[in-house]
Length: 126
Image (cartoon, rainbow, N blue to C red; front, top):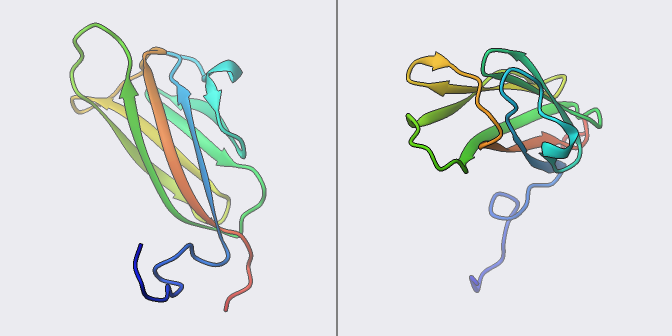
């Protein structure tokens, strides 16, 4: 631990909230409720390889979103990628797209997507 005072930039930021979760993909369907871990969000499949995550709670602004995956299957797999797009900073929704090669691809339950979102917890500024 550092032996100096921590300022706002170094510690947890005031007026922000971290929302994280993970879910197993479900092929051509939305993830099932049993496959979703974490609270404060919902997830729905909106297209091939596209999963729309909507934060619940009415945050005035979405500051940052990051997503990654864990592959739990035994079979060899082309290295997939997870891309965050269509971020709506005012509604707290964003799309996570799972990609294999250069194509958006639906994955089964052996691909688990994890995300972390930083949302403004109040519309007040310092």
